[in-house]
Length: 422
Image (cartoon, rainbow, N blue to C red; front, side):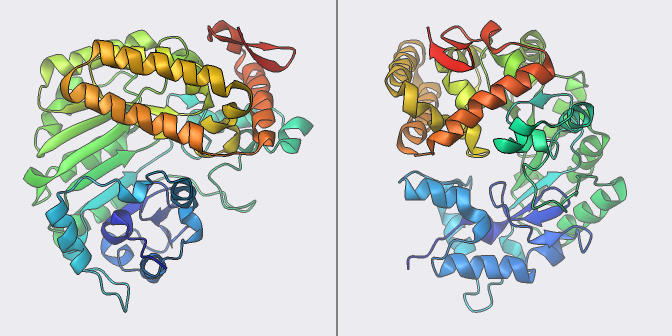
């Protein structure tokens, strides 16, 4: 078998829901934070070493299933997505011990931290694990037979969980942050990439504390510090900019995930006007920080794909995208069964828009991520039953949030429980 060489498996640590793994996609609970939170004890933990050895002999670990699925469809998976020079990557690979699965500590370049699920949004692709708003919603309604029959994992509280007894939550304390950052400063001199995810980091006191403390890392001048945010809450933009400038580069990955049409529908709690206001302000006061507008792409985005691209690109940001592979009932490819032809006509309109409106690197980036979305949507095969689950999910969430799909989508309508193109 061919080696499945993965940057994240060799060079990353990813803190999740009271567990730790190597990347955002990897779903196995490799280390429990109750056992240790120290990067120096996690990086070469037995489960990390076994993961590396499995990939090294060409066997996909169970938790790497989303990358495995993409590569089976001849698509580029996340294991190929890393942001370091190729020369450095070759050096990192040399620091892997093929016998033991161990890595030299100076090979750790990437760490992703999550402190809490505290969030001011309850987005339709999210769950109670990553959103306190979602957690509150699950407390306020009664599950019904359809939710169980169609296994609507988000509404059942089972999405991003490992069974009925998994009740873990993100609750990292200030003292734990001290331990982690002190360990990073002492033991990992070549750290290059720090990512913070949530919840909503700007909504969390732990984020601000950690950001201040991480500016003291001995390699801070060579570190790219990035964080994922809805960027749609009140916070001190000036102070944020001040702290980010202490790193080689600050990167704000703004999860926009919709155009002006569907943004308040898909991103429950969000206001497009507040988003635009905050983006314009950070751009005025900070020309060093990279501002990236991301589109986390599910079936919802595909149904309004032209406005999604037009709206995000109108903000004059670096464009980025990812795919919602799970739960399968909102995977973008489920729409191929009934709407393949019209969706691809919409795709044609998007690429025509990009070619007519953009130039240079922004055009290249937009085309790259457009092709990524189009290829995944067209090439991935998901069973038809998941499309039916999508229709039920729309019905249930519209009722729970007291809103109406038909008020936000211009080209589609739900009529008698069926989705129709108009």
